[in-house]
Amino acid sequence: MESMNTDGNGDEAVPGNSPDESGGEAAPAKKAALLGPKRLIPIVLITLVLLWIVWTILGFLDDRSAKKTADQGAKTTAAEQSHDGGTGSAPLAVKTPSHAPKSTGQAASHDTAKSAADDASHAAPKSGETHGSKVAVPTHAPVMDAGNGSAFVAACIKPLDHELNGRFWGWRPNDILNVTDNVNNFQLGVLEVTRRTSVALAENLSRTRSTEAYVPALEAAMNCFMIHPRQYWFPTAESKYQEGIDDIKTYIKMLNNGEARFYKRVDNLVPLFRAFESMLGSCDENLVKNQGDLSTFKADNYFYYSRGVAAAMQTILEGVSAEFNEMMVSIQGADVLHHAITSLEHAAHMEPWIVFEGSPDGFIANHRSNMAAHISHARFYLAVLNQVMTGSIPPG
Image 1 (cartoon, rainbow, N blue to C red):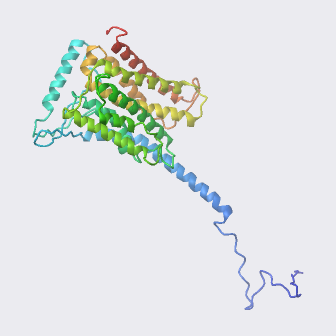
Image 2 (cartoon, helix red, strand yellow):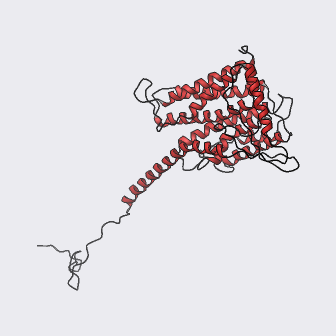
Image 3 (cartoon, helix red, strand yellow):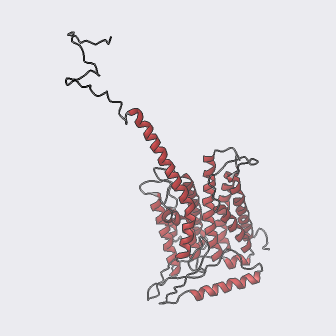
C-alpha cells in the first residue's frame, strides 16, 4: 500500500504523480537541463580541441603552400624602380643571372659575366621608354637591376617581406592564440638572418670601414629589426619590421638616384659570411644534440627554425651571386658559393608531414639529422669562402 507524506496539520501532501483536479495525470518532472554545469564543461573542452585541430591544419596547409605562392608571384610580377629622369618613372625588367656558375674556367667565366652585364645594360630602358618584356627568374631571386647593389639589398628584405605581407595571417610569433608553432619558428629563423644581414649592410657594405658616416635609413632599419618578435603592442613587432623594410627600400632609391654608395669589396663580405657561418653552426648544434631523445614537439622547433634560416640565407646568397659575380669568379669562389646555395636550397625544401625524432639507427626517420646534413654542408662551403676572402689560403 502506497505511503503518503503529511504536513504539520495532518493534511496529506500531494505526490508528484498524483492526478490533478481534472482527473488527468500531471506531466513527469523535467530532467536536468541539457547545458547544465556538468555538461557545459565537456562541451567547451571539445570545442576548444576542435578549434585547435582546425588552426593546426590551416597553419600546416599554409606552410606548404607559401612556397608555391612565392614562386608564382616571382614569375608573374616584376619590381618597379623609380628613376628621376625628368620625364617620369619606367618599370625596369632585366635579366638576373642564376647562382650557378656559367663556366669552370676563370677566363671563360669572366667573359660570360661581362656578356651578361652588357645584356643587362641593353635591356634597361632609356629615359622616357618602357620595356614591357618579362623574364623568368630563379626562386626568390632579386628582380632589380644588378650593378649598383640594389639586387643584393632587395634580396636582403625579400624573405621577411614575404612573411609579413605574402603569408596568410602574416607575422605569427606575437599572436595571442598561438597554435601554428611550425610557422612561428620558421619566421624566427627568417628574422634572425635578416637582422644579421642588416647589421653587415649598415656597418660594412654601405660605407668604407670606419671612415664614413652611417646611412640614416640603414641605421634606422637595423634598429627596427631588433625589436622582440613577440612584442604585441606599443608598438607591434610587425609594424616595426615593416618600418625597417621601408627604410631599406629608401636606401635602394638612394642607390638608384646616386645619393648613396654600395661598396663591392671582398673584405666587406667577410663579416656577413662569418655571421652566416656562425648562425649555421648554431643550427647544426641544435639539430644534432641528443639525437633520438627529444620529444617531437621540441625537435620540430629546431627543424623549422633551421629551415627558416636556410630559406632566407639562400635568397640573400643569390643576391650576393648576382652582385658579386665577377669578384667571386676572380677568386675562384663561384663554384663554392653555388654549392653553398644548393645545400641551403635542399634544406629549405624539406617538407615532412610530421617531424619524427627517431633513433639514428632506428626504423623511423630522424628529420633533425636529415636537416643537419644540408646545414653542415652549407656551413663548410661558407667557411671555405671566408678563408679564401681573408687570404688564409691562396685562391685555387
